[in-house]
Length: 390
Ligand code: IMP
Ligand code: MG
Image (tube, rainbow, N blue to C red; front, side, top):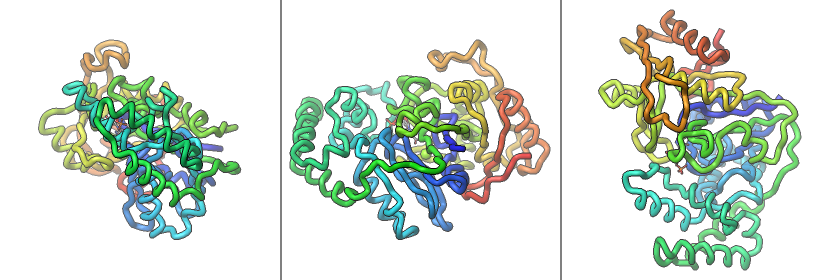
């Protein structure tokens, strides 16, 4: 049985270690969406690593960056270098689809430029060039990795990008841009191939359902799809049988702008940020924090047909006097007016630790509203911190 892992909130749910845990049952770990905007924290042999582009597998999995993923070649090479220190043969297990879209530094500059133009309406992107790269692709002027096998074609494409972007961001040093791309491409050329995928697959989702460009809190979203249904389209692998794992945090966070119904702008919010060390793993920005939002989770579970749930970072709330949970909104949940919604927050007694009966009550409220079983409770950054929920 294949598995698809997705985040059910606004990203940063702690998907990395769940991927690592489930990777033991799978041969392939496949990224099908997102790009270097992602930051999945995983411990390998006790060493902390943040995966931006490489799937978060272990010492034995085949790692496939499939065509739905946006690739920044430098970020990828740096990550491979880092990971080679832990698994010296890792490069032999990495496959990169030639169809992946390439992020250029022009796209990163455009990302910054668009954010500035938007002023108070800026999205708060990770500035990794995600939006511009996707829009190049929609405009059919984007660079794909296969273009780089033919330096003339690639240079022409980069020149087109530069001349269009130049109208907004000024003159671009074309020579430098092209040289940088080819220098990085040379290092991973041999890994650029679409593999014949045999055996069982774990699809590693990025960001979260609420950041999906079609199903999330548009326009405060990312630009590639985050739903499980994107796994097959993004990878070109159609699974014969699969289950969907939805990962959520015991409270809610969001980095960047956009509606956030249960956000805490007071001391409780600061407390959550401190306790949970809620600072972006890609950008280091402080994350906005708030109570668990069950109507939002219910929506995310519905659009992604989740079979199994994993709750993470519940231990962060250990020792808090009271814990809030949003159990309903003041009217039917519709994502397009999420910003105007009033929440009904119910407070419950906090727990000492995850063995406490108060925590069991918290879990049972969640399962009752979501009508899906919580399979694992994660209480730390390591794979070993995942416990089966009885
Ligand atoms: P972009 O994906 O860089 O264009 O950013 C768009 C929005 O998605 C911003 O609010 C980002 O903070 C958010 N975002 C993108 N990737 C991640 C992620 O991996 N975790 C959390 N938020 C993300
Ligand atoms: Mg993250």
